[in-house]
Amino acid sequence: MTSTIPAAATREAYPFGLIQLVEEGVDVVAIDADLSVSTMGYQFGEKYPDRWHTVGVAEQNMVGIAAGLAASGKVAFIASFAAFLPGRCYDQLRTSVAQPRGGMNVKCVASHGGVTVGEDGMSAQAIEDLALATSLIPFDVIVPADFEETKQAVVAVGKTTRPAYVRTGRPKIAGLYDSSYRFEIGKSSQLQAGTDVTLIACGVMVDVSLKAAALLANEGVSARVVNMATIKPIDRAAVLAAARETGAIVTAEEHQTHGGLGTAVARVLAEELPTPIAFVGVDRYGTSGKWDELLGYFHLTPERVAQAAREAIARKR
Image (cartoon, rainbow, N blue to C red; front, top):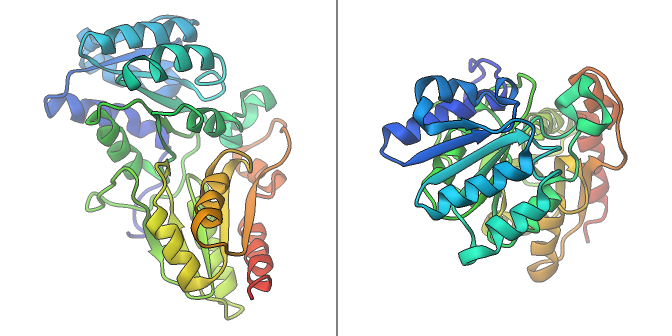
């Protein structure tokens, strides 16, 4: 991890992951639904046109086509905005991908997730997508924190036979990892040690949580920061270690607090080790604005994460 890594949008990593998979011999095909300039899938199509298809504004058809290609032995990637994938085609994902054969080999890469889609406004701000994706039983669900992690996550899901959902974002955000990092599905990454509270975050909220930890350090509070990129299957061992060793948890996500990271962490704690926990997420629909200003509008800020940490610590026995 280094501060010299340039900022980049996680969506920009998608074609690099696809290209790496092909170069490593994986039989990839990629399909887009009229948004390839935004999902960045077109860059893969320019390099491998025989592995690239676009279906127009027809997300539901895209899912069915991908399921058919997967049934024929291909590793099928599909991409659109998170508001449309899974928002517009949940039924097709459920009946054509999740249910047959225990799960078809289809990988969803949903760009423009969360509220940082920005000026596109409320209807395009996907704050339910993780709840929908985690409800699909065989799906792995991943929210990477930067460009490098996203590229590696795309490669990782491409090498499994399970369906997967990878959420990417629109804005350029801080780089956290260099090429020495090794992403693994179901494993978290501890970015900072701490003894008083653990901040468990995903996506853009990982960097926000690191900044929150710095604020807490000024008050003499030692905060562990964990990047929980894989929401499903969650890293139960890391959650339980955080509970045992710090005694208080905060989850931070660019998603509503129902059905996403917070729900997954709380379930682990409820089942094995009840621990004070506070949740930072979205609790209302949004508005149009610049992406960084919207983080403030929704209180997805270092100050709010730090306050949640104080609240969780205060409830320690």
